[in-house]
Image (cartoon, rainbow, N blue to C red; front, side, top):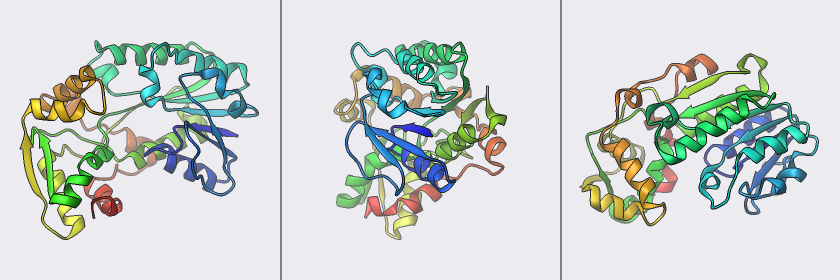
Length: 279
């Protein structure tokens, strides 16, 4: 049995499907009730309360940990998730971390994530750590404005980073869960090229087959919009990266190719597969 947390999101959903299609027994964990592939068990649990994972972990041999906002919850102790896994007989844990633990290690959330990485390393379990950069799926922030006004509004229109398709993260996670060769691996996951917001808008327009205008926001305008869905500190942190990526954040990593034997998918592929969100 393999347990997938965050199983209904942009990474967990394709990961759950891939594992099920590989013939593995899968338990999908999410905070709310949700549809899952045929043959997959679903358990509702909140990772901010790791003890609630016990029913999901019963009989499990491997666990994919995707914390999302749970890492920032008041009083949350994500290290307890590793403890619950070990106590429940799990042998292997694949942790979704972030590239920021090496590119900008001083931030509060990245310090906490690095500590969780260290906890996993010291747990005695088999492990692998995935460190993705920015996600192609963040473009879904623009879906409403594209549908209603045919416009992408974003800051730093001509500053890019090598964003990654979440489906590629899921594919790497599946490999790490299923293949002993990846035990002890730490993988930095990026897309195949640096791409700017303006070029992302062009790719969305191509996928739609209709024009999409790019409107450049000021940093203050972008922060105001982002602060509606995340803490202001995190919005500032994100804007620092988007506006002034350092050399490590601009690097195109070879790790997707190394694990999957193929190059990571470009943003245009993601846009084509997700074009319905923008119609």
